Amino acid sequence: MESQLEGGGKLPSSRNVGELEIASSGLRSQILQLEEVVEGEIKTARKRIEELKADGAEPAQDEVVQGMLDKMKATIQAAHEKTDAELQDYYKKLKQDNALTQKEITDTKVENAQLQQSLVALQRRLKMLEVALGD
Image (cartoon, rainbow, N blue to C red; front, top):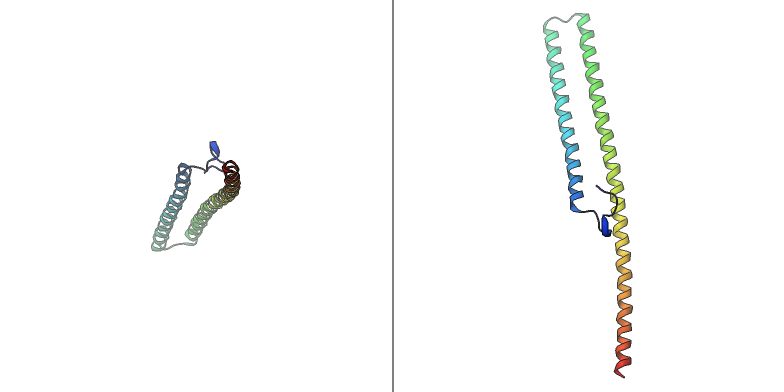
């Protein structure tokens, strides 16, 4: 999402809001894909462990199993950390965009109040001119 006003002093268009929604759904799909990968890895590892147990696991095979578990744990942890970092970056940017939008809203309200005051002053002046011309 753009963090600046578009040309002509307008707020960012709905097109940019759509991009934000796409980014959000993109993160959701990444998380779902990551969960599927993790579940697949766990199923594969469990299946392999069951096979090794059925074969009468020897101490050397226990080391193989432990190595596989350690590798799987490291892979899952790395994927989790990457996703967590992406989410942190996304929320940081979202917070910045929200702060900018809030500032733009505040500025617009101030400008609106100033314009209303100017309008009231012009209406008073018009009344005074009408009274002066009417006399």
